[in-house]
Length: 428
Image (cartoon, rainbow, N blue to C red):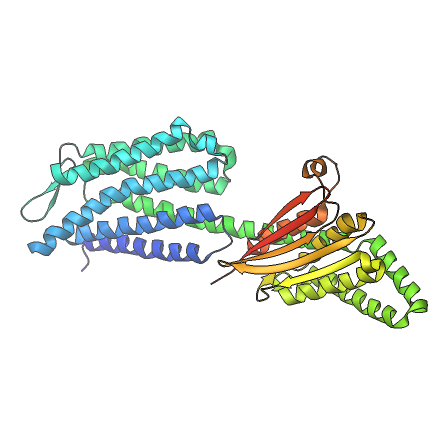
């Protein structure tokens, strides 16, 4: 027959298993906000330690000998310490949702919770030497001491401050997330009054585990919604990028070039048709391609485009390749729009033309792709104020970030040229 204590320990251990599985799921998930995911994992692991320690505290309660002596003391210390630590981690998690700017994170109300939780952890440590909160008798049985209520009062103050912050900044939370976060405050507070006068079940810790389940479920729901939103945005970006790339004037100029070459140089006209076919196929394939493609395939599309431009502009357009790294993937239609900008807005605005250099290299698990031209360059402040929409580059930057967590940086100087650097993190 199972007694109440056995059922209690089993509930705590099931909470441990859930928290560890949830932490593993969060660790394997890569489509969630990095800071929120990191804080959630810490909360789940700390909650697992809390529940596991509580289970050991009950299991070794009154256990004789040296093993019982150390187990009840270590486990009870971890229960009290982790209770305050989880509140600190929870507060940090709440701030990630409520505040975007660092200024608000430094507000007195926000900082006060950090101070309260740190004070609570310090008092727990002091209690190990002074029996401030509890003590153990000769049979290794736990007993509350005179000032035990402080261990409840300190976290309660911190939770009430967090509750006020969440209500005050309700607009920054979804309804589901608001309910989940508030449950972490209200459920433990609901049982504090009971557990202050009755010590038989870890009602507060069980309430914390229930709240963690709610937060984890809502977090995963939010992640799925964000993932679906990103996929829709990526699809829209692919379409808008495709439409912006297959510009009517470029198609017209290419067909005019082919028509002229059919009379002047039929063989070159045939090559241009082949380049044009590669260019169009690359654009159309990108409409259906959701995953990154090998760098070599992206370069086929770039060379198809450059083949056409070389036929049009001749010696005015020079191309230089410095490819030191090829073994990586990249979102489709990433390099070609940048190269087109370099030719169209850079070197072709110089009477004598110029050179576009495409280079790649890998440094410390990061791949750097550089597209540099020695064209007319531009003033970035002037471009920001020109009122025109720079769809191509904006789409490339957005797709780099959404698809592979990459970045795009532009450096340009009037009269000297422009350099665009793409940075891609590599796995392994």
